[in-house]
Amino acid sequence: MPTRTHTANQETFSFPSPNARKFDFTNTTTAPHAVRITIPAGSSYRGERSHWHETYNEILTCAGGRVHAFSGTGLYSNYDSFFGVGSSETFPAWSLHSWGREDQWQTQGADRDSHSSEATTALSESTPLLQTSSVVDPEKQVKELHADIQTSEGLQIQDAKDNDLVVDISPTSDYWDQRYAAAHELFYRNLISMHLDAAIYPSLPTTPLLIRLIFKLPFILFPKVLRDYLVAYFLSIQLLVLYSAFDYHPYLGSFPVTRWWTWGILPPRPPEWACRWQWNSMIVISHLKIAFWARLGRLLLGMREVYEEYTPERLRDALPKP
Image 1 (tube, rainbow, N blue to C red):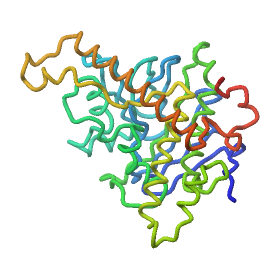
Image 2: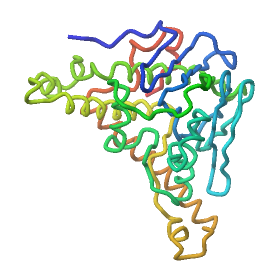
Image 3: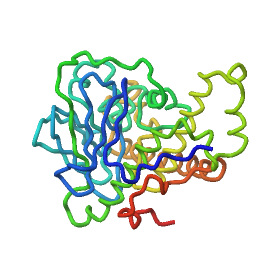
Image 4: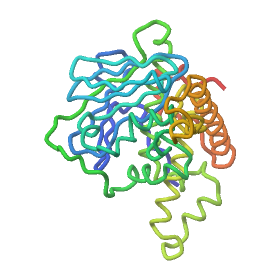
């Protein structure tokens, strides 16, 4: 019976095309526990999607290429930034933020909902919700996660001649933020390893027997497309279990409070109280959905927040407390 891949002593992790990217924990210059992410030109990987932290500030430093970043704390307090090597952007606690390749943002045109428009939607509801959000309900995100499990057709970057995008991500150098630096690295190590091991979940000894039996059915009764779909579905739940243990809150939807204004029923500019209600609903919905799916993953699917196989000895103290 297979076991999880031992990645605790691994310092670099690579994903193949179409969502090619590389994670490196060996040569970051911003902080000891920073993660360096390289997205090659031509990759369809869109970078990190909309999320926020509630206990520390995060810093994004560009070490190669050009990056587009979005940050916001409300409908009237959000902005896009574009910068290159040597520049950085600090995302304060409670700030909804995302980042990706600048050339992707420029060439996607009306499809920019994956980054700034997605985040702005969380605040304004002026465009359709949850089209490409970070990790949403498993029903919503299964197709995107499927690209990490098998090589499939992805979005083609129009300008493949651009340089690789290289960014460093870590809590800021402030003392209070650095207390979370070890957990920050542990989070990314488990996040990466969970993606890489997603395909073996149905055959692990900790996986419920019923799921293991289903995946032992012959292909004529259980075709590959269904297998891949379920593996991606289980992966999306596993990620929510991981999020529940760390201060990582993806955008999972909100109540469309401001829609009455954007539809023209009321004056075009929503009042501050409506924007704040919508923002607060986003926070509540995120917490409730993560709590529900994380509990289901732990109790019914045999999932854990972190795994020993993915955790270096030096990060044992960073394990989340029960």
